[in-house]
Length: 262
Image (cartoon, rainbow, N blue to C red; front, side, top):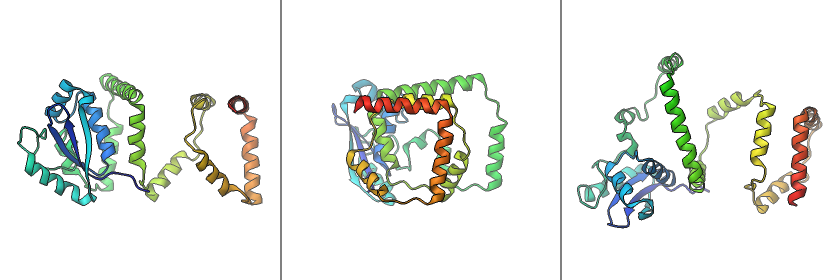
């Protein structure tokens, strides 16, 4: 079931009734982006940013107004802008509906939207990035941005998780993408140290599966007969897995934790 909201939305100031109008093919993710940039004080709409700084996050409502098909979003948004743009109660600074308000940060993005580059051009772009010198200033800037994002995600964990999941619901990856990811992961070796860290990070974390979901998964496996070849592969994989003392230790800890919480 596809729960992605596509259509017109409004950000309303509860103190004075002023509002910002927008449209998106995924409103939940769009709301997250608005809040992220507003809280970082670098939103592309300076009028809305100033109001956010003055009145605070709790004095704004994010409202989904109308559900629309993807190809009708900009048309309906433009109708609303034609009606309210220039009015003192409207925060919008542009009278024209765009694919994405963030394009105002970089107008070149809008011009390149949907443009397909040839293999030769993509190869030149790739080579150009490979030979690019990374200065200490760039490294420090990336680290600062990364730390700020991690901090924000921790502070808004539930909200971020909700919008992240909403952005994945109904999304189908192309066969080419699946093939590329499969080739990248095939043969990938995870160090014992990384395995231990992964295990420790999951200790005490509640699993997302409900009892009903787990029962459905179990039902699909009941009575299922594996071929001799599959059984032999499983035996070899388990044998190889338990030859590693780190894996034996991890499994022992999982069993202890299971009986402790049972």
